[in-house]
Image 1 (cartoon, rainbow, N blue to C red):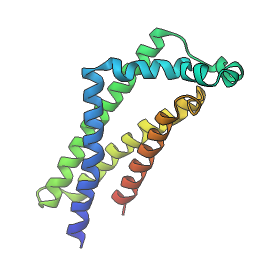
Image 2: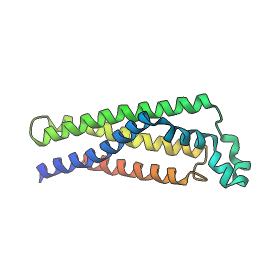
Image 3: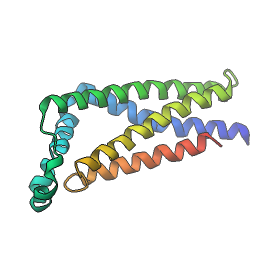
Length: 161
């Protein structure tokens, strides 16, 4: 059974790793896709359009600066890319540990650091999103970030068994 657990951990880390690596790659290849969504959320444009009465009360939190929007998106892409690389290393280490070629505890530690980074990215989106109240107008993004945070948390629990 312990051998089976290593393989389960490998596959459970591999999936969010691939998800994040693909997301980071797409953010590099087509930055306008998510870059404009980040700018819209920070400027609270969806709320202004869909919930003008809420925007009147909460719009003071908006961040209108295009320079800040660019900086925030660059920080997101850099964070996603670095975490994806750590997760790739952790996934590879778990694979090698499952084959008996690498220390299991080191492999789990590396994978745990990567998955913690994954979870923290989405947790940070939730915290930042709360500042701009993205539950109103960008609730699809908020739901996605909640699900990704839960996914990362579940994988973290599996890694620390």
